[in-house]
Length: 301
Image (cartoon, rainbow, N blue to C red; front, side):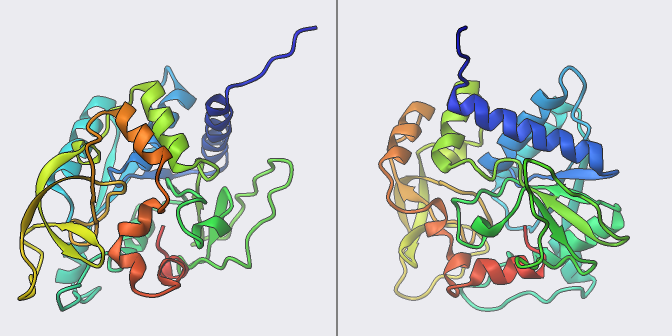
């Protein structure tokens, strides 16, 4: 009798599709948290596969900080039009205007933490009971604690010591009114897995991931792109560098790396030789040793 072996990418894909189908089976109003980054794009692609030939049954929810890369917003709108999916947008600027949050001050001010309130407000307004994210355990030590189904209390808070056991792939999504879950179907993937999968499936990605020339400044050991939201110090000078981004967040906090990788094949080769995590150039993660975990406990994804 011949043995049947799955390619490792097929195994990861099958696991993610199983989790997406479990979400649809157990929850009434799930959404995909769509940032326009490679991980949420891969999750959306997996959702297409999981329910083909039907349309994706999930709405896509995007928290718009107002400090996004223009390329990210253009990519998001084009993808939504292509998929014919529902788009839910939570606006951080609206949260600021209504007094729900106060904007940070100073040269390193960011709206990253402010989006927690906007996200939780959008979840409550649209009665979302499960938000599917593209978080992976290899990204950051706080995310390494996540389960596939991650419980949030009625304040949207995450308690890593109070999560459901996940034995034999049995996922428990039961919750009380007002509580919700986050689901992470690609938790077991690495950055290398994501890029190999994007290459294999020929998935469209924002041009920001490919090497391109851009005006940048050197700050906190990374190349921060110039934008109208950036406040320069006296000793900082604008330079033009050929860079690409390994992760996409707000334009004010996302650092690029110098690179010549302008194709998917070159990116895969480059990532294989990397020794620093992809979030190593995110200034919001450098604010403290527990910056990510602190945000997650408050409701961050």
